[in-house]
Each structure stands twice: as structure tokens, then as C-alpha cells.
Amino acid sequence: MYEKQGTPPCGALNSYMWNKCIGEIADAIEDIALLRVEELYLLDGRGDSAEQPHRGISKEQLACAELRSIRLERTPVIAVDADTVYFRSEIFCEFQLHAIGGVPDEEKGKSFWVSCKLTLLPAGHRMEVLQVNPMVDGEYMREPLYPLPELPGVSANQNLLPDLSGMDDAAHKECLEKEAERFLMQYCREALEQPQVVPIRQIAEEKMGINLIVDKSLSDDLSVFGATVFVDSDVDVLTDGELEQLHCKAGTVLLDPDVLMMRNMGSYNFTLAHEVYHWYAHRAYMLLRMSNAGQGHAKQESAVQQCQVYNNGSARTPAALAEIQADAVAARILMPRRAVARKYKKLQEKYGTAEEMMVADLAIFFEVSKQAMRIRLEELGIMVNTVPQPEKLRRIDCLTLFDAFSTDKNLRRLLVSGAYRYADGYIVKNEPQYVENETLTEYAIEHLGECTLEFKSVRHQGTAADALLQRYEDYDLIACSEGAVEEEDLKQKKLQFERFLVEEANDDLTPPEKTFCEMLAPYLEQFRTSDDFESKTGIHRVKLRKFREGKLNNPEVRTVVAICAGLDLDITETMEMLRSAGHILLNTREHWAYKFIITCCEGMEIEERNAILIALGVRPLGSRKTER
Image (cartoon, rainbow, N blue to C red; front, side, top):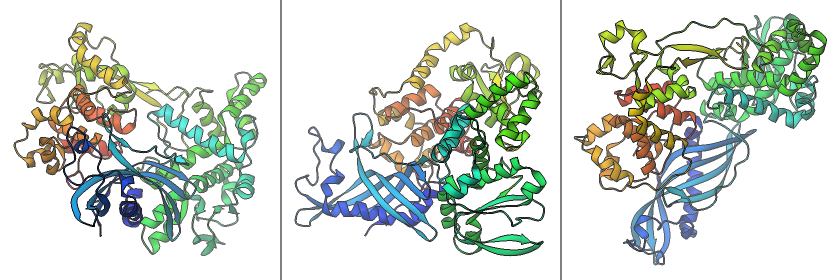
């Protein structure tokens, strides 16, 4: 009989899997271990080579393996297709090996990539384990033994919402455009190129099978425009001002009739497109949310998505993100970029430079509001927004600095080279007269213009203030770095900086000269005790023993970064440590955040750096409970 080991990683899907699906995954692994143990490749690896033969049971003698414990490490691949979820998780198992004749032998740990298909239902789920793929020691890092299967669907996050984030603002907007085009390719392909009204009601009722109810008020003050029902439920509605409950089947969309009567056809179409996208893309999210809500009123509330007119677009909750996605994609469904651009070009021949007349004509043509059309044109770069530009500033908070660090190569060059550093909210010259004990000197405070960088606001190309969605930022902050440091000063740190650039641009892992444990050994002397190691890195003390014994040379990226942060290493040293463990930092938001806390958070404790990661929406480093 096996036992569940530790606690699951953060995330709604991980939690659901750990509580309701891990048994099915364990059964699939155990079936192979008992009947086809050779498929698990349990006796591979460093201890089974010709130079260092395996000391215990041989492959010829191995009869079967008994699963003793199972642990969920991570789920890096998630894809959603309607109410079906495809995911790939890393699972660590411990086995009791049995020789021929049933004689128990040694215990063996093994990691697997497990690919699954999970169909969420209003009351439970159906799950199929598609593949159990052992991870074996490759030339430089662990790798799957067999080719991994392609998983269908759209990439999603732990809450099963489509992953439309992108690395920066431009990539994020391109993801939104692609998502709208995916919808139109399925339901109205001709609208992508040919200017026309997108028949959203016809799509909803005839092509998607949505039951549309448009004669029931949803609030007495028109604070709720629409609602989407994901599971058969009783929905609160108003009839002649009296509250009553209306039983609705899954796949029902309710639109308040006052949206059309008191607003306009554009608002009505936008609300309908918003609710249609909820049903199209957020079914798995809502079913997971309902499953994790438990029983009673909370579960009932989770079955219906009521859409507030003025939602808090800055709230960092899955529900708020679902609303933001529905708003953003709905606008792009009703106003496809190429069709809008073609119609605008044609109207230019008629109106010339009379932009407001073109906006009005386009809004009527596409049956959207003038405000929505104006915002769309500004987003596409067709019209220029004239919102006044904010003034320059010097002091900048840590989270805003991350955005600048991610997009401004010149700023990154200054920080990585060590010529400048972040202290007390300023980007300041890294010299003793300006910085002492991680803070500005009195001289620096009195002469900020001499030693700190100024930031200016630069407007996003082709974007606009989005008053409807309340979520687009108008400007990027760019460091005024021209002439900020003499080239001679940079040349002194040229080797360090060029090594960082090589690491950043290198897509292939070259063979490291030393193993990770060999690289780490000199630094371990800084930790007087195992408690000291744990407090400074957030990594459980058990791993310290493995590092000292040279038994853990392929720790995951988070573990390496946590150790480098605890040692207060610079970015070049961190890159070297990562390479020795078989990793490079990729062009993802998570890895950019790691670069940021190493480069810009010099001298900070692990808790302070983790606070920044959490604020950036990135899982904190280390865990004394799970990083074992």
C-alpha cells in the first residue's frame, strides 16, 4: 500500500489532482510496476553503469516493484478543450524492488512524466492516464525515456483559464488577437478578412447551442449586464421588480433587457460576445472552481458567472482574470483586426482626416459602441491617442522596475554589468560614495541628479487607454541611460557582462566543467549549520546533506535560484550554477523574475525576494515543507 508524500505544489489544478486524481495516477503506475516493471526503467542511471555497476538486484533478477509512496512535483503543461483538461505532471515515486521468487530487495526512487486526460463533470470527473514516461539520466540532465505525446487544446494556467499573458504587453495583445481569431476560425471564418457584422447572436444560438434568455432583469440598478450558467442551476432574476429564481440549464446565457433599452446595440452585442466567450473558453475553469468550492451555497454560486459592469480589473483573482479575458477577447471577436483595418482604409477615401466621423461610421457598421471602436482603433495603431504624457521621475517601486527591467535592454545592461544598482527606490551608481550597506549615502541623497537614473514614460506603440476594460497601461517606463556611465567604466566589467549575454542567448546546454555539487561545495562553507542553510535559502536541510554527498546534481531551477539568492550570488555566478545543474533561464515571465531578483535585489533576504516574486505572480522560492 502506497502513501501520499508531502503536499502538492501551489495551484488549483494541482490541489484537485492531489485530492481527487492522484489515486488513479498511482494505480496506473502500480499496474506497470507489478506486471511490466521493465517499462519503468527502474535500474537505469549513474549507479548502473559499466564503471560503477548497480550493487543490488540486477535487471535480470527483477520480478516486480511495489509502489510505496508518491509525490506530485509540478504540472508544467496544461491544455484545455471545452470541459476537458490535458496535463503533464512530474511525479516522484518510491518503490520496493522484488527479485524473482518474491524476495524483497532495496528501495528505489524514480521520477516520471505522467500525461493525462481529465474530463470535468458537475459531479466528479473522468480521467484517463495517457502515458507514464520514466525520466532517465541523459548526457547533461534528466530527460524522458520515450517521446512525450502532443496534448490537444489551448495552453492554460493552474486555474484552467487560457494562458493569454505573453512576456510583455505586445506579446499579451498578440495572444488576445490569436484567441479571438481561433474563435472566429471555428464559427465565422469569413469575418476575419472581409469587413462585416459578426453575427454573434446567430453564432451563440445556432452554432454553439446556447440557450439565450433576454427578458429577465438581473439587477435593479443595471450593475449586472449578463450571466452564464455552467451547471444546471437556479438563477436570481427580477420579474416586475420582484426577486425570483429561474431554473436554467447548463449553456444558458442571460442578458438584461435594459442593456439594449438604456444603452445601445453596441453594448448589447459586446455583452453577448463577453458571455459567449465565457462559455467557449471558461467551462473547465468554472467546473474546477465549483469542485474546489465544496458543497452548499458556495458551490451553487460557482456554477454561474455573473458579470459586473464595473469589475475591478486590477484584482488578482481568477474570477477577475476571467472577466478581463472575456472583455478583451469579446472586443476582438466583434472587431477583427484585419477587417477593421480594411474598412478604415476604405472610409479614409470618403472622410479624409475627419477621424470622429470615421469612428462613428465604423461603430455603426460593426454594431459596436463608438467608445469601443475608438479604443480598438487606438490599439491597432490606426488612430493616435492624445492622452497627456506623465512627467519624468527618478524613484521607482520594485514591481514597476521589473517591467522596465524586462523590456529595457539598456537598463538591463547597466544593472547586470554592476555599474548601477537598485537601492532605496533608485537606480544609483554602484560606487562607495553613493551606496553604503545597501542604502544611499547622505551625499547621494543630496545629489540625486548626479548619481541616479531618470525614467521617462514612453507610450505603447499602437495602444490606447482602455476606459471600458480598465486594464491597459498607456506608457512604458524607459530609463534615460544615454551617457549614464562612461564606456571605460563599463569596459572594466566587460567580461562579466559578455558572459551574461552569452548565457542569455545560448539555447543549447554545453557540457559543464563541474557538476552542480562540485560547483556548490566551496559556497557550502558559508552555512555553519543545516538550520542556517534552511533559513537563508528556504530549501529543506535534507537537501544540504545530499549536496555535500554529491548525490543531487540535477536540482530544479527553483532550487538552484533559491540557493544562489541565499548566497547573494550575482547573475553570472547564478548562470554558471544553473548550467552545472543542466538548466538555462528561458524567455518566460517566471525566469525573468528570477533574473530580476538576482540582479536587482542584492543584499536582500530570501523572504524579501519571495515577497517580490509573489507580487509578480510567481511561485516563491524554496519551501521547508515541500522542497525535500
